Image (cartoon, rainbow, N blue to C red; front, side, top):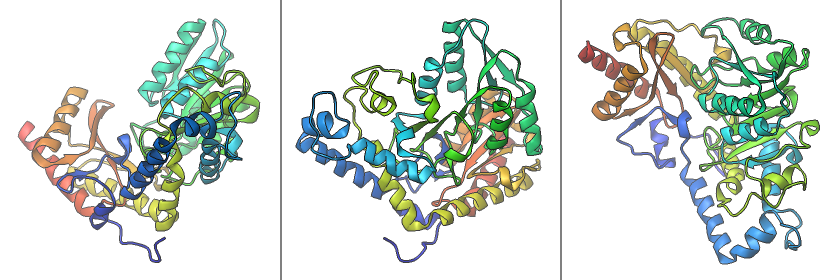
Length: 401
């Protein structure tokens, strides 16, 4: 354990395996695992290989007729520690490979009938929206879309946009907690309350939430919650959780049915067949590492850097940034100069030039007819990285024009 709070910034790069020659502003896409957590994962793998049959068939998540050597199976112990960190009960949390996998499990288990509606938003994550369309297609149901306000709108407008899209046929709504494309923290608790008052079940997509902002799942009023651990919680890839309210757990099955079928919520997801469980089991070590640095210190540093980045980049590019601070997590999305283009193809060109010509890795996308950069702020970044991005974009845009 560390006795003093470290100085975050580029000097902290040594704690991560990143190439120091790359300015990495894309933590939110697939995460980066600290060296200490990678070492813990390897130790778990080494332990598995010493007696793999006992570890996987008996002690990880005991299969029927296998006697465990542990009072609490490995996966249940890890799930309990992760659940405590996320403000939930261990019995309500299971591990899945990623948030999209968890969303698929909910969507393919949810009882839908012909003519029923699944409500999504136009800022929802594409993979999850496709999963909703697939589930609806199989059931003869329909996917409807709520048009969300632009960044900078008051929080109440986001609540009204979702609530206003509900019809008498809406059975399930998928709502982001942090929007992947715009990096906005949505007022999930208020949105969920509005939906529940209309009898609509809520699946919250918290892919970017664990580790990035304070979280207490039990208090949100949702029916289901999915969140990646391998992004902002520093767990190795790939690891995520699916939380389900107790009254929603019966009949909820993983996409892959195996030995845990009809054995209860946890058993169904804990025993999907042989896999490498080391990422899930390393999650408590990731939490321990973050606690050693100070969870509030980490989250406040990243939030403050994201806010400062939004203002600095908008000023440098002569664009607008008017997002309320409360809606900024550890990422921020900023509009590029008009000459950067309008399309995804043009956004891809800018992203490539930033990486190959300027050694800057950052997410660049097209939204509302303009090109935007989504900048992730992590404890190995500082304002010098933001300045480097600001100058590089000006050069790329000038050359493109």
